[in-house]
Length: 108
Length: 114
Image (cartoon, rainbow over all chains, first blue to last red; front, side):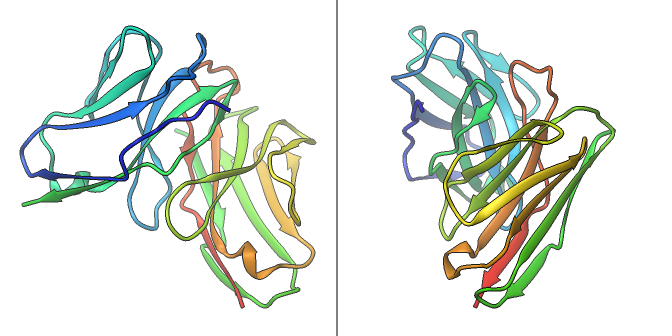
């Protein structure tokens, strides 16, 4: 299974942008890059996904490197409700294998 | 709209007792279904997935089993629980036709084995 590598934790200030990095150097050509986030005692919530091109939705933006070996989740203006564990995952044939994720804390 | 439900939400079981966690999905047909476990700390471990009735794939050898008796029902079971079975169990579904595989998770079932 291809792995992803993320920093264990990150801090952000409220109202500032946040860039969450992810390395996936063993990604295959057909693997989608997914991001989920999880609040305490809740199931993970889908954030965004992409294959090659950068993607935007109401929650975040996903910037994918040209060689697809890394990606960055961008929260344009962090709020206190964005504090969560963020998982970067490769979708390999329909199975999502979650890593340890990045715990994002947001300071007021 | 599609919804997913898991129950029970919490349970405390003695070692050696049986387990049955249920998950149902509404508003869709022929979903792919998944059971994950999250132990203390982070990271979700994929336990089982199913692409159809009676079709179960196991990702990790263990004393748990899964069954899919109906299209939108997924059950996680054990005949004899171990202490190490404690954790937060999550059911998830995705449309069987989606190549991108967005997963929708249930509320989770927190199991404590004593």
